[in-house]
Image (cartoon, rainbow, N blue to C red; front, side, top):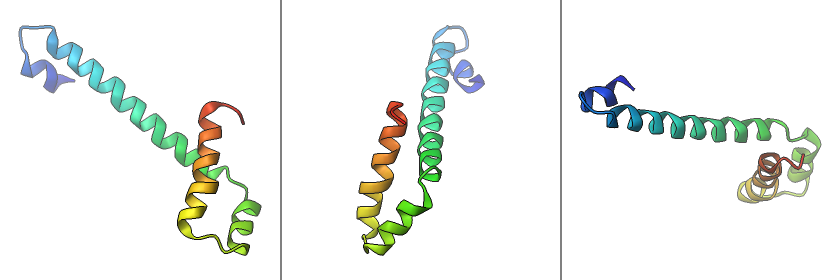
Length: 77
């Protein structure tokens, strides 16, 4: 934030750009931590079933992890 203000010392533009940068950075961290939390919330039984049916790593990621994260983000869970 101080760097943005220092770039434009006599204008309000630095403050506004710094605020926008902080907002978008906060949203990116929120998405990353939300995805991590949704991965940790997957029951072990589903993970074991994926191993039992010999899913590949890509199919586990797509069919189990991404769909669980999508349901978690949309608030269905």
